[in-house]
Image 1: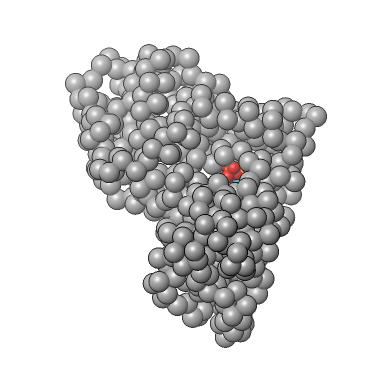
Image 2: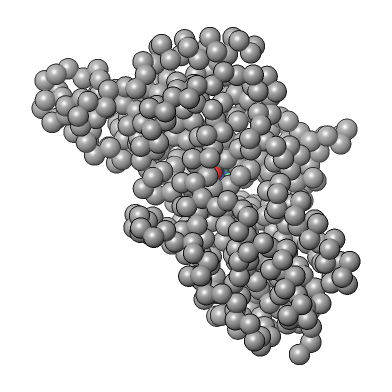
Length: 465
Ligand SMILES: Cc1cc2nc3c(=O)[nH]c(=O)nc-3n(C[C@H](O)[C@H](O)[C@H](O)COP(=O)(O)OP(=O)(O)OC[C@H]3O[C@@H](n4cnc5c(N)ncnc54)[C@H](O)[C@@H]3O)c2cc1C
């Protein structure tokens, strides 16, 4: 047997447009190896999603004559053992940009190279490597619109074709079984997620095609309305690299007659988030706007509990938090509303909300999540100004006028007329009675009064202005 090439599989569980796997397959025997990084903290919901997608990926690789070896531990140590035991001549991977992983991978590459093992790294996460789009003076963009214009002028490489066959060596070491990675919780709380999310490339492409055919034309207007379902729901697939962003981009570019730009803009927000993460690796925990380091956050444990449980008494916030808990996903507009509520109405630090999201979202993505939270709380690049405080009731009236989304997630309010669905505490006693709602029992009173909370948030903001 010729010396094989190990391809480190990470959040790129696909056989189409997989530059590292593609390159290795041109050269001979390949060992696709997934090492669960025991040092990385992975949220519970994403672990479930990862388990399901690894399982499907194993079948996909088998269908093209390949297989996926699994292992876990400290990545550099486990990889080094595999290199030694298999006499691998080279290791290839698609680059990841989470700060710890990026640094670790660079050190690992140096160490392998110094032992005579060839290392090649590829762009498999983004449209372009995150250092590619910079201002003329060589510094990273801090304004999204300028970043977008600059990226849009670039040629984006075409996606590579799906692999048809892969040659894998016979190895004595079978690696671990999927269950040994211990990704599933002991209590199976994921049945709703099971019924919504199909893992794997085929499912991702189906979702994309269905979105492009049926909903893309209305995306620009519809994307802000959580009850309309006009968004793509592709983020869980992008988060594990089950579909490549270049494939999505080029499928769009090839559709001449459709309004593609609003969707491309969102894909480019993702690129912008990754650029921020690479250039400001502390951004998941430190405010990008230094002023906010002085902000006086509160530790409102009761408020926190009610927010996480979807029991704040603001239906749009509660519907969002319950959608998150049940499905591992939340609509973008609602993410903004719940994040604003946590940071401005409850004055709870955005970092705590960001951690909760990383634990409960199946599309948990450090770059997008940090950008989203910093943007909402006012401390990010090109962020919403802190003093612009969403009124959750008005947001709800504007973006979920008929209460379709609220009714879906708060069945206890489903019979309330549209007029009161956004703020049940305004409903007269006879309306509550006729719809079987006792406030404080079936549905909570608002945890804070909007006007008072707004005033308090602005006072806090004045202190750092
Ligand atoms: C507080 C907060 C936290 C967030 N956390 C995450 C996260 O952990 N993971 C994540 O993928 N997204 C996150 N987002 C961004 C956005 O909400 C999701 O990407 C989007 O809701 C996913 O749904 P979709 O695939 O239907 O999006 P679509 O509207 O169909 O957009 C298509 C794709 O574009 C990208 N995109 C869309 N909006 C954004 C955005 N605002 N920023 C960056 N990329 C975007 C995503 O990759 C998305 O899949 C967060 C936003 C906020 C406000």
